[in-house]
Length: 263
Image (cartoon, rainbow, N blue to C red):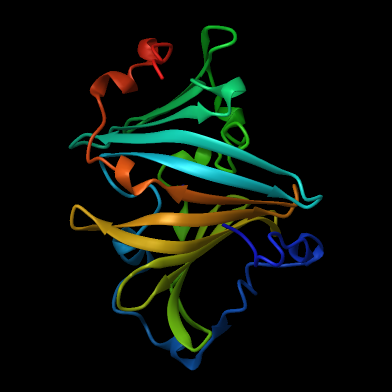
């Protein structure tokens, strides 16, 4: 499963700004931070609305990429997810546009004890294994890494309550080695509003949620953006509402079927 403020379509100011996990998003720790929240961090996270939180889902995403030099690109891709009653799950991304990467497909299969990642390249007509060492790499320029497609790993620090723009939020910090992910979740409705990722204390990306809608009686993030300071780039995402389905064809999730792209 959005970074920075947008000024004139793109904000480059954050690229040179030193931001640390201790000073995330302008949030101010209030006195209530010393009051123990009703729930622990993992419980709050599990209740919050996350981009890939639905167990079984299918939709199409349009993404607009804005570079600091004024350049733009567009991508469109299918995102489908299938989960079983156990800890097994599969996530698939298949590109619809542009034409030079159409039918390029990524599949991530996760079981209780391992994660397998595959990528199909139409130009080569080959499916390749994505090694564990490459899990932090971005999926074909869409601002989402292979790692992002899995459930976050690591340990949560104690919950803080912070205030931003006059509203109070739970601040959840997930530590995984050199990586820290900081989530702002609104108190009361458990809506994820922002996520900031640091690696070695340096800002890696910031995700900002723009819209949450209800489909099939569940809340779902339908519009968000990702700012990457290293690449001076913002990507805006919008899910096509008419494309949302509760399930995808099971055949999509077989590694040997990734080349069967008919679009």
